[in-house]
Length: 205
Image (tube, rainbow, N blue to C red; front, top):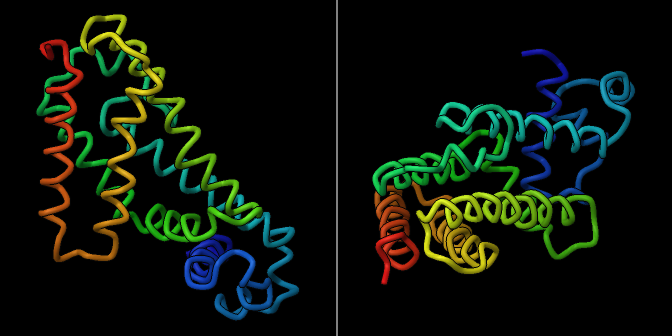
C-alpha cells in the first residue's frame, strides 16, 4: 500500500476513535510510522487529509451505485428507478445498507461524522451535507420522477423522500457494530421497503 493510502487509512481510524478535532498531524504521522515533516510532503494539512478521505468515500459509493445499475456518479439517475419491482428495491436497499454498515471506508467515516454532527466544524458540516442534504435532494428527484410516471402515488416528493430515507438512518444507528444481528437488520430493511410501497406505491389506496 502506498504511503498516501496508508495515511488516509490511519487518519480515518484516528478520526473515528478521537473525533476530527482530537487528532493532530503528529498523531497521524506516528500511526503511519513516518516523521511529521514527511506527512506534509503528501498532504498540506489535516483538512487536506480529511477531504481526501471524503473523496475516497464518494468514489467508493459511486462504484457501488454503478454496480447496482445506476450508472456513473453518486446520485441515481431517476430514470433508472422506473419499473423496479418490490424485490428489486429490497435488494438495492439491502446492498446500500450493508455498504454504509460495513464498508471499510464508509462505515468508520459515517460513525466519525455522526459523532461530530452537532459541532460547528468541517466534520459536522460534512455529516449534514453527505448524510442529510445531498441524500434527501437526490431522493426527492427520484420520487419526483416516480410520481410523474405514476409509480408512486401523488404527494410532496420531498416528504416522500423523507419518509423513505429516515428509517434507514435509524436502522443504521440501531444495528451499527452488531454483526450478530445482521440478518435481523436486513429483514428490517426489507420490511420497511415493503410497508413503504404499500403506503406510497401505485396500488396504494
